[in-house]
Image (cartoon, rainbow over all chains, first blue to last red; front, side, top):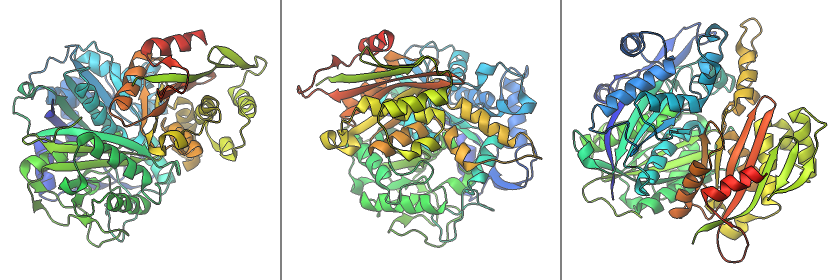
Length: 390
Length: 210
């Protein structure tokens, strides 16, 4: 029974709605900008933030009474928009809500926000419950907080649950907001680039943080889509480097394990992979590690991009937003170039997309890696001629 | 072949309990940091990195050590077929608050990467993987309380499609001085070992009796 990707929505610096974001990516636009926002950091920084006009418009519609936080508001908006492209009854016990986030309402810890909401709003389980209950859903929501692989892991979990028959539909929402907490933390790690990031490039020097939300709805019932799905999720898995909590493995072993799990689960072989949506944070060690894992896995031939220079590293949202863009790449038969990349800068031979490229891709690999040594990989396949999976 | 639970550990309220039997008890020490050092010593561990970790990681690491009890699972199942499926309630709230204090005041601003890195709950899984050379599946899920049904369901999905042959599955929670670790060693049933059938009911019972 295939698991269809039946609807989606993205809100990030590049706009509100997947089509708007996709069109601006196609035009080579970056949402990573220079900011001097004293409320977010003590000095200037480069990041990809949701535009104030977009946020205000959404908040006016959804949060006129200030009952929701910024994090909750963007999640509610995205889920509502994605559900609008389906005929799913979100209140049905056949539907499960999965929230992917690293820090949720972390800005509520700031002094200026104290007392505005009940303290339990800091709890991620509370966020999951608030979202699912808003849509009348009574199933127990799932909240995954597994650093930067949270999004990919959430899509894999949704796939596993649907495949095993626990639910018929899954609403996967991944989100993180920009906060002083996270910006100062990455700055203290000296992980932030002083300019737009350059994934896989010889002169890359770090990442850009991004704020955003993505919602992907999976279903075993393609009739639930207002526009029939063309892409299915075929399987995935995760792995750990068992090496270091804040640096990637030098060998790529954990990512290799995750890719093997994804290949075995989907029944797709490395030579059949026509596109890789990599993690590609543009930190020196991460991109180097990925090149090793892809090469070891026999994936050096597959055209690959990183989307981080378009909308930054959106943390808990990244795996969901980037999976959605990968799905659209397959549908639009266009692979996007790795914005920010110009000169080859990783040790192993991989095929970095340096221009937008027309391609009919049947199978795509989406990967992510994160703090704690975690890695995840997911295979997406065109629905027609879908591979049998176990 | 259904998996079985071959060992369980619970650490809470000043006690360490394994499969219903109290292994260690100390009610005099009220501070978690002191108590967990006693458990670390009780477990016979010699692992200097322990002292660098935040409290949540210390709790998870020691629980994993006691649950594995010297078993080298990687030799039995392969290092990439052992997984960690862990629920937690408060994410890393203690360390989040500690980190927030370092950035609250611009005149006294000292964000530290050594603290910031522990503001992700899955770092605890990373520490367990590093110590025990586990390369397999990781999943960290946030729940309002220990939930046997979803813990069982998620672990079963991973066993069901062959991504794991063994796992450490449980609930590891820390919020201020409230701590609670419950970990089970779940393994494919080869017939060589005794254990309880791996069901939500078994998980619930093991958690309750301890």
